[in-house]
Amino acid sequence: METSRVGGEDDDGHRHVMRVTTGPGQVRHVVCDTCGHRRRVRAFAHDRAREHLAAEHGAGGFRREYNGLPWLLGLAAFVVFLVVLAGYRR
Ligand SMILES: [Zn+2]
View 1 (cartoon, helix red, strand yellow):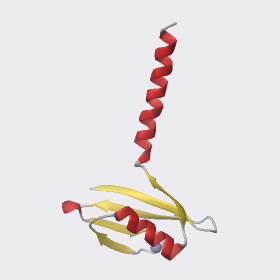
View 2: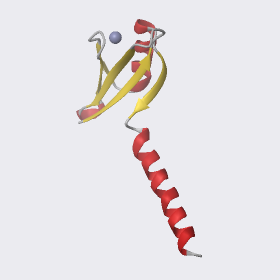
View 3: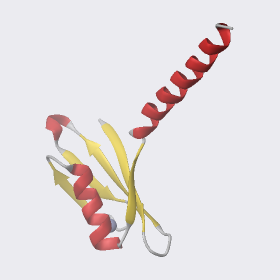
View 4: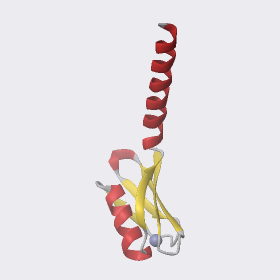
C-alpha cells in the first residue's frame, strides 16, 4: 500500500491536505484531512483530490508532495557528481 499527498492552500493561507492511498486492484482511497471526506476512485485520484480541495475548501497552488522529491534529489546528486568530476579533470 502506497500513500501520497496532495496539498493546497486557501486564500487565508490555511493548508488542506488529501491523502491518496493505493490498495489492491488499483483502487484508490482519497481522504481529506480537513473535513474527513472520503472517496473511492479507480483513476485520476490526484485530480479528484484537487477537485475536492478547490471546490470544498477553495484551495489552490497545488503540488504533489513526496513524488517530486526523489527526482529532485537525484538531479541534485547528478549535479554534484558533475561538479566533482569537473574538479578531478584539472
Ligand atoms: Zn475536505
